[in-house]
Length: 219
Figure 1 (cartoon, rainbow, N blue to C red):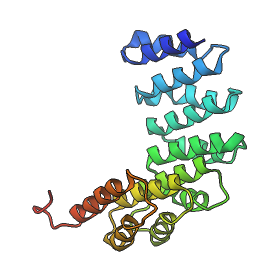
Figure 2: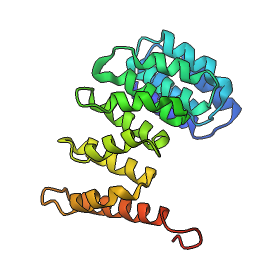
Figure 3: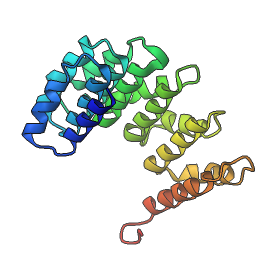
């Protein structure tokens, strides 16, 4: 199966109509790993015309991982009905919340302001880590100016999970609320910080400061 997976990956690199047809054919493969790679390849087209195919995969494919990839891809299309489909898909039970995380990531890609409530709900502790990270991604895209989103992201940089901490750091950089800087500076001084952490935090602080400079004075 490894050779076929690599062959499917190779198809996506060309981005032609011929390879697109090949990827659509690969969606019929019995091996879920092949179908998953086919969805990833089709996602590169960012084509709204593929929305129906993604919805079919979400509703019918037995593989959690393939469904999650289809949900991510659907969000990338910008299809008008994507919000409704993805909002329903978030509720689907799966191992480690794989499907929910994929649907929430799709909503982040969609950048629909209505997704804010989903981000606020699923960032909470108790949800699967992948789901929480996806929720943070949503808040980074649609949470700017929302006080609750800002508070939750600020709290998340103190989460026991490093994965959650640094997802929140990146999200705060995108929201670019200058009020986050003192907390990020304090975080950067922690003795327990991993080697890569300080540079990530300092980059985020610089990004926020730059975003808040007057027009004409940004780096």
